[in-house]
Length: 516
Image (cartoon, rainbow, N blue to C red):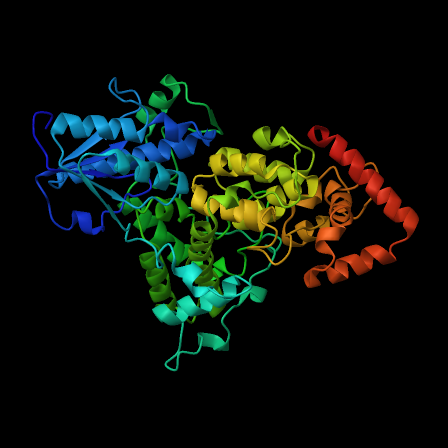
């Protein structure tokens, strides 16, 4: 292959592993496909070692599959001597070496890569062309067009429109099945005592080659791994296996317990398909259609709230967040509504804290490169918001630690939904809570050093005082938010001496974050 001349070069990014793409409908002998491991992608945050290994293994499998099916493919590894460690320089060298006449790429999902490839194409002496990834329900601009002229970007409005457009979970008259669009109020149950969810499907992928390559290249990573037993899917067949396992073993109770947390359970009934979808090993359309088909065949044992909650996460939130990203970047990544400057506490990197909820959520993240949406929003995110952590620090942590974290989905959920750093573009209010919520949705408080019912004592839960301190501190910006009117009424009626003690306790916590 190294002596052959090719007419067209096609770049496949590590999150574009879509065998169903029209590029691969028919073999093109004069086309060379390239995938590459480069340090510009490994080094912009500290990635979880499982995330780095999973990406590289999935990319290598994809390249091998293409080569085995008559799509000539070049795979550049991290330790290849000629690897220039960035896309543009590697592409320029390949174009020169193989006499390429035309360059093709699929539109990146990340703004920085979109800019890089736009700039690269502007420097070329040959023609270039971009293609859609053929993955999402929506185009980059569809959400912006939908909300054009509207004051609020309500996800629920967009979600309903998507349900209608794609005719999902509707009856014959285009009304929502069950008479409601959203069953979220039925999906907030705590795991009952002695309830044991079905175990998660854990795969056993050997990624020792990728692991050693990353270590030898001295890439900074975080988290734990057994490189002989990576539990995440790294090809399409494994992703489909995980999807079918979810339908059969998790969907029947997914909605009911989708917000639940437990010290002994890290997966509950979640699908854990986000890595497969975000790398495009499988598409959101086939995930949604497969799960709806399974529900239809098993309506007697699977209630409507289970499937609606799942569809809403994919058709609603996932597409909505991508649309917000392309509406608001690049300004979005610099938003800091509360002007927070505090550093992220050290325990986010170690899990070593006396706060049981944070200890378990962070330790789980380090162990599996995974936490579900409520752990991310209402435990680690909630604390960072209440503690006044710089959203740059929060983004850096979330973007690195999670197996499914790619900027388009991470930053909108973190800087927007979780940290309210966007001032309310995504969330209608800051998502904050005291220990009462954490106790309601988990067993984290049961064995914690801190007292969930106390606001001011030496062993009072830091969430309690920090919650009130947050709202007091930002009253000027938040008091006119109608969803917070009750919060401020309660605070204003609180005994002045108690309020002073609460603020003093919060101040102590803020000054001793690494010791909590």
